[in-house]
Length: 67
Image: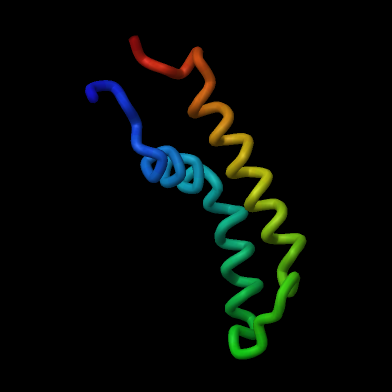
């Protein structure tokens, strides 16, 4: 189906635009990777999630779709 974007491509594009947030989350996890627990880096994760959702909304908005 021409013009159709796979969900994984949308995900990759959105996450790729959140490098600062992704790096911050990764550093938090790696700081004590042998003792990772639920909600250990919740602040960093939520920033990454918010960035992703904003970017995904921009990517999938009708004005961004090609005719």
